Length: 188
Image 1 (cartoon, rainbow, N blue to C red):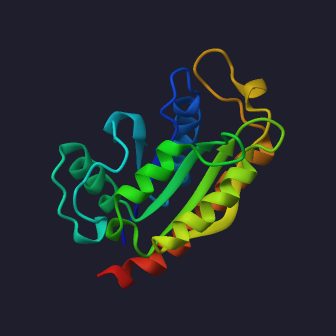
Image 2 (image 1 turned 120 degrees about the vertical axis):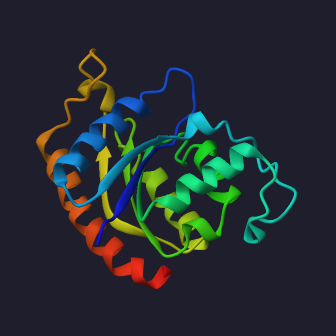
């Protein structure tokens, strides 16, 4: 059974480092081999704040950006959210992106690669759990925090993640593949 993993870079802020971390996670996931992997940059969808007239439950999207985002999310069997921590919370761009849709998220597993200062984004990852459970996404307890992430940027557009982060990412992907495989028949 083929499984598709969408790795979603969630920050849309100018000067963000999310694409660097997303690229690293994409390489790790591709080497893992359990998924067809797609790197998705939330900024490329340019989603305004909740601009659809109908509730997401209806899936009566009128805007091209919502239709494109819906197709992207619907195509995934599992997700990794590459997420910074802003004031102890997930970025508003991610909260909006989750709330714009509903049925596209249902019965899919997700995991988080969080980054930031000393906490490595763990506070924001914890807050994301409540939001995702409300749209019936199973957020795994396995996550990969990247504390003091700026110390691990190589200046060439890459990330030199510490070995424990790489090991954690591999274990997270193993668990994500197990859940994605188990949940896929429930969506049929």
